[in-house]
Length: 532
Image (cartoon, rainbow, N blue to C red; front, top):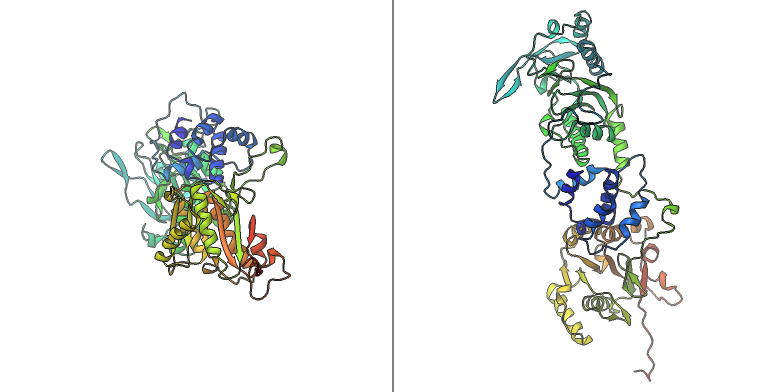
């Protein structure tokens, strides 16, 4: 548990999205931590609400695919955390797997293990590369080139007749060094990558965490493991299905496997990428411990089935929650941003005809939030705001802010609360702009983002409901990732708006009216001679 607490120190809760914060809580509970650990850590975030951690903690009831401490370790690594190297296991350590079978489960004899390994990985006519000779350099035993001129069938036949003397089959080996085997078939002419005849398997190996944790992550990921071998020292070797048709496809699939393993907290040795790589030969001794075949054919039977499963479970969607679990402890509503109109973290559309003053209205809103004033008579929360200017040149935009301050008669006491991102001539479609905005704004603590105007960044046909739904999803991403409100403006459709409902006046698909949490419409009022 001390490791996960150390890793937690490298994660800033203020930099996380709401879902990432929940994931940390679920991982801590899964690893046996108390709610006070999550609560104490969460206090570093300005969004912290007293008692919220306890309420959420009670709703974490686990599921078939729980979020574990691997999530916390991965977040920590992305922020500079480097886990300590694995420690030597003591005799009285209690682990679900410690690299050796319990006394009442003696390992299978050496020949049986190797036969099972060969039958699992190779066809009987395929050449197998193996190494029993080694040499020592800097206190490490290194393998020689080895042998590659015998088939799996020939080796299996010899092993079945050797009466336990595997040295008679493979040649004697150094019991301090152990022995090695190549897990992909060869052409019988050499042991380089070009001698590999089928890009069938890859090696997944990690040697900087406890053996039990290595196996736990491998099994939780449901990796398509053909053979699982204990190296006799600090690591488990997973021989994983790749099933590639070419060397290039092999490289891409191995990189995908390694990326998924890394994201789950398994720090894979990336030097094992080549298809002619050696792994540990099961059944032989290494410095007093057996290089043991632990399991065969676990996880998914093929790479493609595993990839389909992995992409389905890693969809970044929140888990379902039972209403009964929260009925008596409902979460607090987000605080108001514009009292009676819009809450923090929600979306608002300001619609109106061209040249109706929508930009001026949004600048007034920026000032009201920055200074904690009213906007059109509504009280506004005070905080930092980002104004994304897509239409005016930089000088005009800055002058306009100063002019509006003067016209409102508001003293500019909190100009530091207003950031302006001038993108005229540099804007990009919203699906490209949103990730950039999120990355830039993540540490700024904005309570609102104003995008003016959206026609500059619309992707697709504004009259297409599905395309506009995809477009508006980008605003949801900004809200979710930053915990901020998003306010944007759009123009009316052409022609008279008389007789139209307010929500039907914005140009394009009705999605524009249905998507935001709040909709404000600006209409031109006829002025009588007496008013003029």
